[in-house]
Image (cartoon, rainbow, N blue to C red; front, side, top):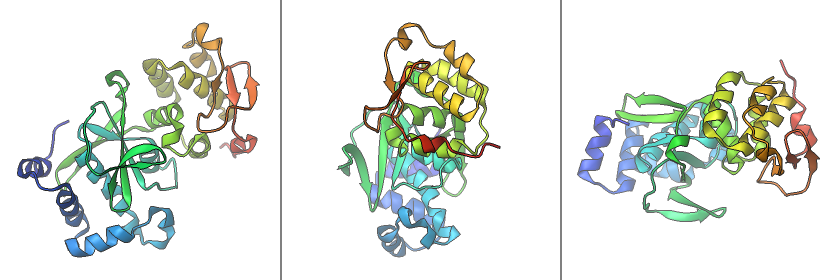
Length: 263
């Protein structure tokens, strides 16, 4: 992805990561770096109601920080869910999908995952294979010249179903997609490209429960071998649950997550 002039400048000057981040965000929010430092230390996305609309938009600015750290990556998973209004819950972790493995500084453990610590935020690079890296929307931040990518709505949903641990679990996904219009044919197309049978089985079950109407098309993507063994509907939960014989899934989520008003 082509870099903006501002990003090229900060790479050439090779300044410390903290200084780069402070400069980018200070430029966006129009405050001094000293005031910015204090604000970042106290900012709590889990208590978003306590902030003004302008301050809530500060969370989106952290996307710029994330793509500076994880170049050639795309904002994904829970962060993309929030961007597409498929989740109203903020996470302190900014998830970035990338095909590149790199050594990072500021690493520490958070819930067993390696993350990059930045004040009271974290950036989580999620490495995937190149053939799984698609379905991207490109954005250009005019203030900084930084170009960055975000997975589109349908790819975000598939990625989260593939790795629910990066979006708060399956109930978080269901809550978001239950009231949102998706391109269901694009979901089938993306599922075919991913060639992940477990994801296809989960999609089939979700389609059945939420009335998407793409069960037959998804079933065609599954081999007989894929339907010989059971998979967990939500790998973030325990392994016990009712077995669904149609999709060969262990239904290990509460029944009430499907109780939505479809309109």
